[in-house]
Length: 137
Figure (cartoon, rainbow, N blue to C red):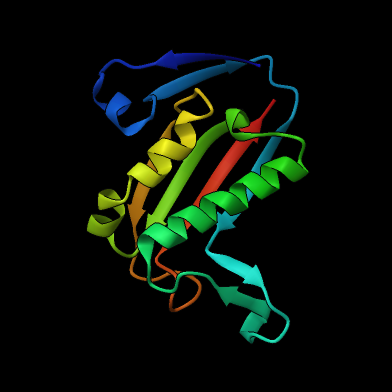
């Protein structure tokens, strides 16, 4: 897989993202469902335990760790990410904790295009962050 950054403007670079990216030589593509800050718990409602309830920073860390786990299971890693979509119920808080993502993605050496979307609520009452992604190789 080859990547070509497309940035008619430089402002996105401060957010660890390219405005666009041309991908060639892609042989495998996966879509990751929205990852939230949960662990399996057969005793809990829906079989899931919320990690870091209503804590943006903690939920960003856990959601990104869940993405790492899926990528690992697919024999991929962060450098395979093609796009990310962040959903949050608390835009100001998310932006104040953006360094969690910036530090996490910096280790991959890439700047995938991304979107940040404010929403009224997410799947569970204590969830304030959800992250979708695509990856390829």
